[in-house]
Image 1 (cartoon, rainbow, N blue to C red):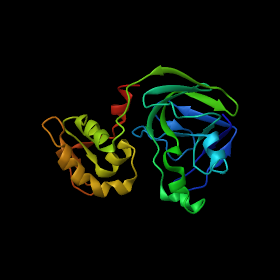
Image 2 (image 1 turned 90 degrees about the horizontal axis):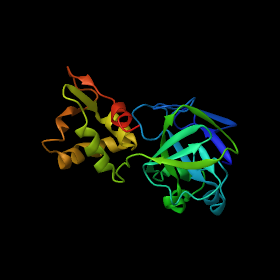
Image 3 (image 1 turned 180 degrees about the horizontal axis):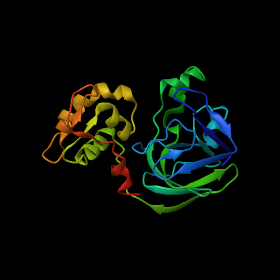
Image 4 (image 1 turned 30 degrees about the vertical axis):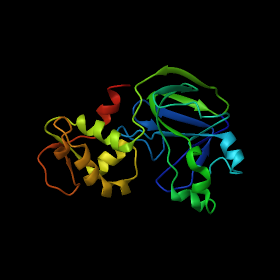
Length: 219
């Protein structure tokens, strides 16, 4: 690893650190993306891609900058970063926020933004620690529609999810909530109880489910 960062709050600049601490199923300490129900605990980016794009270490807003390629890393792979164990979840899409770093950067980055992961073992990582593969867990679907289907299928009877909670669990930005009603109509099936997904302002008697169990079951 060549650099480590945390994001103290959404939209804030990345803060370079000498060490990352992670909690199993929760995420990185002092990082805004820590959430038991999210697949986005950690973003890993390649130092080679940063150099090719003539970017500083923090430009892609990654937590971990690795010295080497991430091209062969796939969802479900387990990476050991120092004493942290990370489950690779999904590829990180580019976002227009990258254009704040440099005009047109989002388009230039394309598929080189990096990969996202969940923390599956308490531990710490320091700059210079090795990054090694070891172990395999179930892969997440590349399509966010398919991830929505899998998560909704897992909502227990007597529980509900909000659109915001579902977007977080599927690993997409909250703006995707506007598209969720149409997606839910497409994935509805006897074993996909889309009626258990409700607007956040709706009155309900059911218990809200946060999808942490969806990820914990495999981890």
